Amino acid sequence: MRHMGSAGVRDGARRFAALALAVVLWTAALACLATALLRVAGVDVGYPLTVLIAVTPYVGAAALLVGVVAFVARRRAPALLALAAFGLVAVAVVPRQVSGSSDVAGMEVRVLSLNLEFGRADPRAVIDLIERERPDVVSLQEIDAPAAEALERGGIDELLAHSERNVSAGAGGTAIWSTHPLEPLPGVAPAILDEPQARALIRLPGGARLDTTAVHVRPPVHASWTPRWIDGLAALPPASRQPTTFSLLAGDFNATLDHAQLRDVIDRGYVDAADADGAGLAPTWPVGSVYPPVTIDHLLVSERAGVSGYGTASVDGTDHRAVFATLTLPDTGAGD
Image (cartoon, helix red, strand yellow):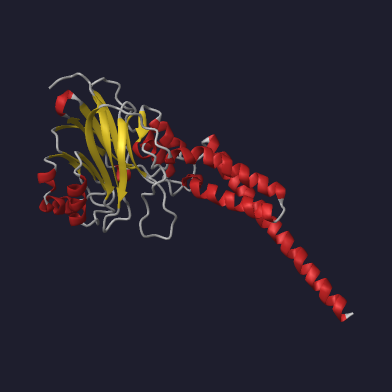
């Protein structure tokens, strides 16, 4: 009798474990599939969906793991659901790791962007990065007056003689530095803390021009902030259609390529430099955090341009990685 009782307990425990595993697998598979379907449908306009969509690549990895575990556990239905979710995510995500930039002949322009995190980035590290990468155009976000002064003391104006600055306290400051002459343009709003995003028309050798915006829109991490995030992305200028003018949006978009709102911006005549160079999954934020890193800093350039040499770099003092790339602007025939 005692033996029969022990066998019954073990059998009950096995049944409970099997039921618990089934519940976990079904729940995980359905959650992954729901997220994948939301990504495909472009449904991310409200918090917390905006945050969930940002981690779409991780959802794909989780779906693959759930599918494998479910197959091993002989739970075919949740396995098929999870693998379907993985397939949907893979179709959207995997191409970012494949270079799709066509060969373009023309003038090369090096561009670099960095969020200084409330101006706390080490100015010496920023200057060292600029000296190493030798960009022609630099976009900085979250730059306040002390940070701008520290960069000046470090010699940024000797490296990039022309600038358009909208420095401010907190996260609202943006600035553009260039080795080439520039003409200030009206700033783009709305943005972080209602400060307009710096914008300038950079006059390049040979007669071409680069319409550049230092992008920093409000993050969609709160229900009351998400509408401003949507408005901020929607307000970004479309790529110029003028033959002699190219457009560059460089900065912290607080959006990944899985957000429909950012894809809408790209559809207005841009290409994402990281995506074009096969580095679209290279994370840019947050550095040194327990949160999963995502790609929210971007260089969007007119789709007529070529892209090569995309990269990222850590900078002491900021939780963002710098992003940089070489753009090739086709000859416009404008002359000097």
